[in-house]
Length: 563
Image (cartoon, rainbow, N blue to C red; front, side, top):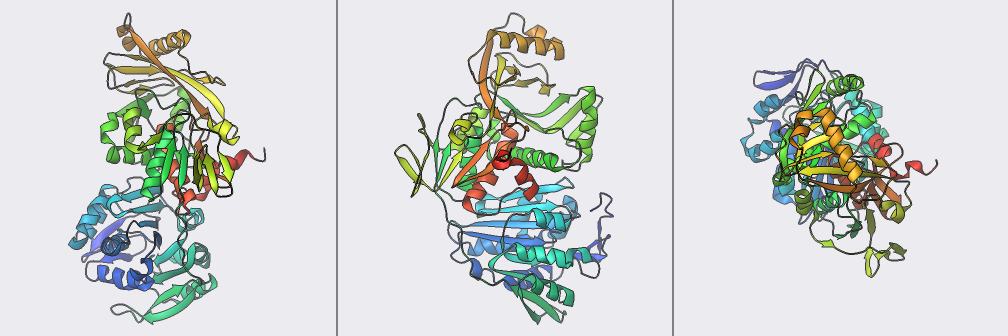
């Protein structure tokens, strides 16, 4: 994959890739081809009848036409309470304007194309998630070369749409290695379809385990291929979940569980670290585009998208400035150059990084929107019985999701470290945009908030006068004009204890025996929790998760087991 893609252009009514010299979709017959070759070729809609979860994967996202045709069919024939998961790969993403112009030729898909285009990724690399909540559908789009995308995807597809450019013009999309990965990621009884009838494609699919059949082609093509994987399809069970913790991690898990149609009971446990009157959601600086950089960029963009769409009333302010230390400027430049963020969303001006997509949010409002009903009171130690997990007299639960911040250590045995943080507040306008520098100054709904202290190894959440003085001193060094305005003002404070891991990465995944954890979020819970909760909920439900395998490994709670 190259950052210098020659792009696409319209020629005689069709959008053509200049790189491959092939057509994305002709205006005449493209939708009919999608329906005949891919939808009917994979036995849809009949094959999802009676299913609770159905997964479709695709090689060659292009304009998104196949996915829109699929969603259109799903809207007409969706099983009750079912969810649809889509996965697609695109190495050279189109610009939103190009896709919009191409899709305008299919007005019957307009109601679906509009939300797709609103969510169209503006970054060049990484994974991007589209939501179609009214349909119970989610699309994960991997913007990268096909082999790492397939190697990283951890789902199993009930249907595969093989729609890359011609094998003669884009052979990398049709290699035996790629087709073997398609086979390895096909569910039992899964079907694959393509307009191609190339002998190498037939042989590659057969070697991957498919039973391959040649059928009459569509509108002028002599033949096309359909292929079937042996076995009988089966839905994963729909587990009953117990979520322990009602901070941002627990609230995000509650939201993710609802999206998958799962029953979840939420138990509060101890003081929450998500209780400040305001929180800053901002990108994490990471040099290059390695695994940690991809994880944190994907999580930040997902959090911002979800909050803006599902909880706009929780947004206090948009945009923020980060004042960089001299040794941070190169990291900021690398973060901008990584292609993991929308173009223009990060702008470096001297030692100031302007973050257009950063948000200041109300934690209380966001938690209230996502949590739902919470079982208040002390939480007894979970017990694993023959019929599942029990918390006191409550149970049985098929899966136990631990998201209680630092107290998760006592519930799970995970090697978590406490970090006590205290912020200061005042009932005055901030007088400056949201700004961070190691500390931060942000607006609240009633004034301003600044700080914060970082008491590593300290699990005492009580308010301390020394920390109040430390926050004031830090503000005076970074923003003396604001500090001067606070002289003589009445100050409030809030404190909490966050959980961190020794490698400073979060924990999100299985602990075995039906236990899962979402913790070690440090001070970045509001940026990390929404996506990582979707990861944990998907693992608990047995459906395709949103993280690539290398990112999932980075946050695996069991990564310390052998240490």
